[in-house]
Image (cartoon, rainbow, N blue to C red):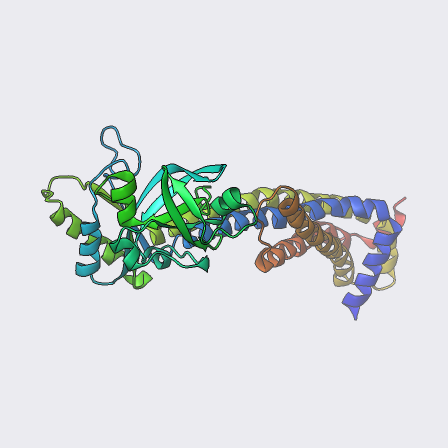
Amino acid sequence: MLIFESIIIALDGLKANKLRSLLTMLGMIIGVGAVIAMISIGLGVRDKVESSIAGLGSNLLIVSPGTGAAVGVRQAAGSNTTLSSQDAQAIAREVSGVGLVAPSVTRQYQVVNGNQNWVTSVQGVTPEFLAVRSFTVQSGRFITVQDVDTRGRVAIVGSTVATNLFGEMSPVGQTIRINKAPFTIVGILESKGQSSGGSDQDDTVIIPLTTAQERLMGITHVNLISVQADNKEIMDQVQEDITALLRIRHHLSSKAADDFTVRNLVSIMATAQEATGTITLLLGNIAGISLLVGGIGIMNIMLVSVTERTREIGIRKALGARYTNILLQFLVESVVIGVMGGMIGIGLGIGASYAISALVGWRTVISLASVCMAFGFSLTIGLVFGIYPARKAALMNPIDALRYE
């Protein structure tokens, strides 16, 4: 009952000085709002990076030509010719724990439909590519084994290519020309959006691997081998086994550097999570400084309040109020300021997060944990920074208080 009465008295005191109370709360409001908004931005960045990496495929290992060591002048990705389709077949056949293997080649070409043209990435792949890289066919079909065996002139297009070449019309069944060679579109891919590197994953044309190698590019090597492991627990072991197998196949001596690179996307995601977590923590800590400023403002206004109400304190003590009664009265008033500021700040922070997402286009993720943490800090700061003024009031000599002018 005593706490309830103290809350009523605290609210009456805040109403009596509305402007001063609002200015005091402003530090808490801005602090809590900033913490929630900054953490939501950090979580949004983490979520976008994770979804982009996950969108490349689950339990994925990427084998690319060229060494990852920083020795000499490093060539551009895919410019080396040290990987072949036979390497991909050997990985699928000899490495345990491997589910699917998809070799691929990539090159930029101008794709033409009538009087419309578009420069895009043309990928030569095998049927396994669809599952390994987590693509989905929106309409039509994907590359088949027969297409690869017969070097078929068929193509599957991404939504960006379909829109730029055909507009609203369905491209399935239509003919396009890639490097002046005709290809029949047999399917369109479901949109995947941007990758973690910012490239448009829908800006692509997919054709059979053998068709790309022999009829379009005139090559025998592959630019990339995508390997899907059976589960995350064996990713490191599969990576080691692939490295050992390729070193044997490429006749590399024990002292020679790898002429290929095997990247583990699970490790990349863990690194990305650590980096984005650090960014989120940094943003939250920077915003949290304003909470301390708000706490100092609460202490300041509570000291002013104690000075203004010195005679009131003296009268209450003369009428029998104890140390705990006075302490609780001013402590509750300080906590009420912190809590009210925190509640308004939560609304401001959530609103700011939605506004940033709508106006700037950044992805934001509002976390219940961040809301609870910000509110908890506002409560704690109201309590901690109110202890000194409340104790000063409670220790006041009633005779001196009554004589105060």
